Length: 167
Image 1 (cartoon, helix red, strand yellow):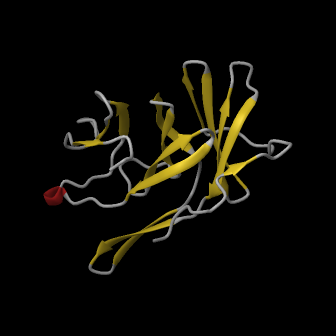
Image 2 (cartoon, rainbow, N blue to C red):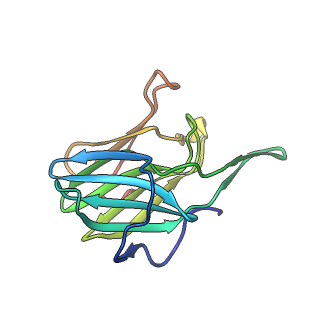
């Protein structure tokens, strides 16, 4: 699988790289800012004063989607777009895309505890008959659950429910 991977997801660099943010989401008293710099994607969690609490850094790589029958589509990284994020049971869930295209594979959800990524799940399969799709949104669902879905304006209205471990 081609994608973003690394054993070192949390960094404590003394200086923040000079960059332009691709996205920003506010959640209660913290903000999340996403950007790409020198081949890595960064997600900075900042307080209300814009001080960095922690940073997630990982390799940002293009993705080759095999459509079957020899047809492939290449997705080139063009930013770090935080699509949705929320807190649930002392975890931070962040839904990310590295490609600025509608309805595409290789979006992922990060489950973060105490500033460290503990789980990363990719959405790379679009198979209507097996209930697989490329989600566009993520929301905090009832109890221990998380919902991912596609709004009807984008495509047919698909929805799936994940547990707190993203299964």
